[in-house]
Length: 304
Image (cartoon, rainbow, N blue to C red; front, side, top):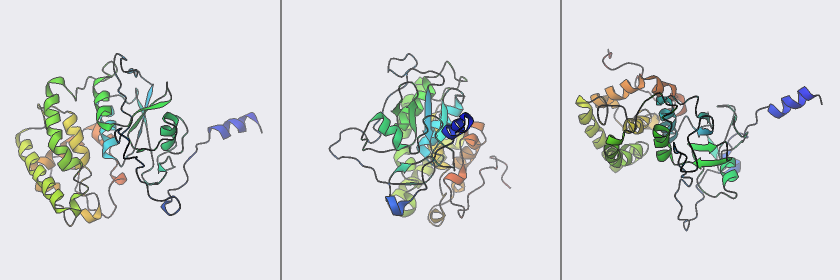
């Protein structure tokens, strides 16, 4: 074999085999009830001063994300809002899985960092015999060769607060608004973020969700954002669920459109006009083709 052929062979992308539930089974979270660790087991933090052991540095970290996932969307959106695209790299897993978990396939390309075929490989590299939840987003540290975090809440906050030296100056988690952001999350999280995908099949969940929409609609009647008159982490957390609302065909018969809440709908579309929100959103990853989606492209005030 020639040297050129050897190089070509070693650099050829490698992918997971196709998702095959019939052969491998459905994905389930393998979690020992006696294990006191959190579901999202890796909770390392990035700090600007390095005191956590994971200092904020350009080129060191990689995010494994999924276009379909609202939790991963929060993190890729914070990355874009702070202009960190050249500081922290990102790649995307395929949107289907079997019991092996998320994989890297032709749909979104190979793993550019480690050449893994399955995201589980990153977890096994970090904790041999890993038996927990393999999830996106996952933050990988190139220097130590391990997963730092799959805790989407703290990961998004770290991107928003610890990379100021390389950021564009955005401040989506200002100190004076953190208590208000937490208070908003205390009811938006359960009602909207965790309720939107269950509401079509559960009357109580649907009632709570629609009550939250009414409350949000009133709050946004005379405010462009949820907290402090500025774009914050609270808006990021809400929006990734709003953009996925009614994205499945069977949702349409039981869930009212966002346009029934005019201030909330105007707010959601106004955010979509911002480049960071557009660049991190792929409707095809979380919406069924048969679902009739409202027009997100129409800016607020331009409705016919």
